Image 1 (cartoon, rainbow, N blue to C red):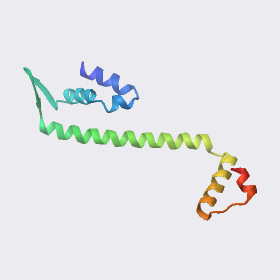
Image 2: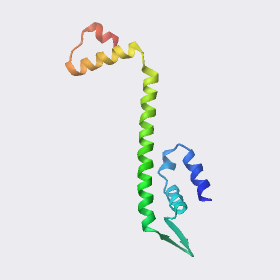
Image 3: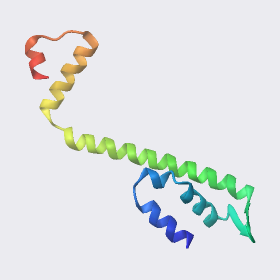
Image 4: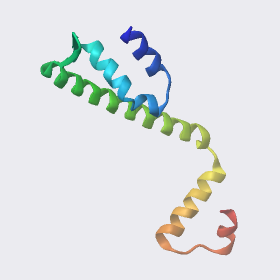
Length: 108
C-alpha cells in the first residue's frame, strides 16, 4: 500500500504534500527505515542515514529542475522581445548610473 500512496502523493505538485510528515513516514516505512514490530515502530539507523542522503539528493534535483523550468519560461516569454530588452537595458543603466533622459524614461 505504501508505494501506491507515495506515488499518488508525489504526482501532485503541492508543497503541502512535498513537505508532508505523513509522506515522509510512508517513504521511511516503504524503504525499511521504519519497521512495525507488534505495537511498536523501530528505526533502522543505517537505513535512516541512507534515506536522508537520498532525500537530500532528490530535493536538490527538484530545486535544480524548478530553476531550469523558470529560466526556460522566462526565456520563452521574453526571448527576442525588443521592447522588453530595451526597457531592461534602460532600467539597468538607470540603476547603475542613476540618470536617464525624459525620452528614455517614457520608454519604461
